[in-house]
Image 1 (cartoon, rainbow, N blue to C red):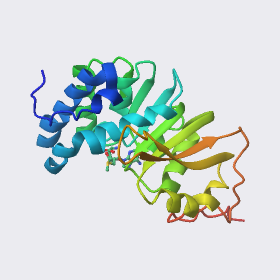
Image 2 (image 1 turned 90 degrees about the vertical axis):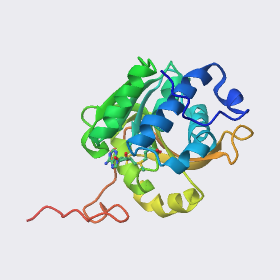
Image 3 (image 1 turned 60 degrees about the horizontal axis):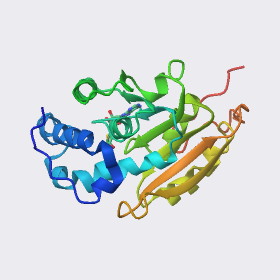
Length: 236
Ligand SMILES: C[S@@+](CC[C@H](N)C(=O)[O-])C[C@H]1O[C@@H](n2cnc3c(N)ncnc32)[C@H](O)[C@@H]1O
């Protein structure tokens, strides 16, 4: 089934993936062959597929509790959701993606990699709160933090977390979102680095955890997300 199209895994992939490495190699081959042919992955990403994409995503599992239900918002070609599904059979992973050709690819991955714990859901994060409930929401390269928070918090159970994989701007993005966060469901938010000693650089994650069931302290004056449109108050 594998085409051998992907670059060979680096030595430390063994430390990161352990027994799951053969499955991840098959996924890497799918990304580097069909994924590139269908424009889901740029050809220039193939040589850095392991370090920059697969391993970088895998270490996020450190923050995912055993048996959790995970929704990967904006899964694209399956990052990080497919990787979590392969490396953590204890998880129940939903790959949430609005674009048809991407969901077709994701379904092929689930079938060919034999991942009974992974399902594909076609839809937009802001439209599925009545259908999906999660312990963990992951998102990588999907939207600014404030927007992700607005999408993810309604999907999360109390005690659940959004794990937003972010780059060097994570701290700044979090600070800029603090006021907006304070108007959402009660939460704590922090920047974390995971995979120290396994991936270089370590993966930066903004973790936002819903701490209690309390209602948002939203008022008609304060409902605007940074960069978003202001909602109108009720007409009198
Ligand atoms: C740049 S890609 C990133 C894909 C993948 N997470 C990765 O890291 O390679 C962003 C993805 O988010 C999806 N997306 C955009 N808006 C979305 C929304 N409102 N809800 C869910 N997914 C969305 C896009 O269709 C696209 O597949």
